[in-house]
Image (cartoon, rainbow, N blue to C red):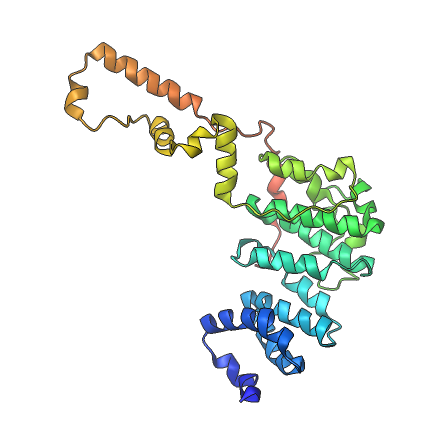
Length: 308
């Protein structure tokens, strides 16, 4: 029965069931199995399905390598291949980045492997939503802390643009993709980001690498928005449920405007004064962003072909 489960017939299972089964197998069952090799073929077949299935099977494959002496010489090449901009928008992106942090935790990895991932993650940071950029930058910094031999990537002035970069993101060969010949110009570009949290994360490029690793902090877009609002208007806006008041001030509507008859009875001069106050309220609720907008060439690299 066990052999039948791990056979090709298991791939006939519905995708929704596979998405539940593989994480449970990797996180719970595999460590308790006496013969983890039985799950090897099954996990590799799931990995070869691509997309989200490759990510889900990574944890199990890594456990086979570290706990069951499973040989997979192209493991890092396979992980590098599926590290694409597609990852930045998945619901499993936090799981993937934490796994990647684990995979690259060893300080004995060859420099060309770590350099390839540092460059790939730096390039992905340009494509990623801002809620994913901060943990990405934290992981990049941690990798540079673990491998001080790669600090030259920070101090190189050239290449400074996408067109000059010898690094080829589409080349899956970790030795021949040109990562060791490149620089981290992508991080310098993110110093122009409108969100202060992102620009703060890029400070290690100029200030130097510290000796202490950072946590991969995860915040949703709503968390960032709440943070901006609290900084601008104070914590009472969020704590006391004044969101509706903020929306009404933005749109020029009044919370107490339910009785239109009462409003219509107001003198014209008073109505003009109320309308003027509403306009002033709207101006007072402008959300601040960085005034230094990026140049028009900022996203010129997006004209290149990228396979999602």
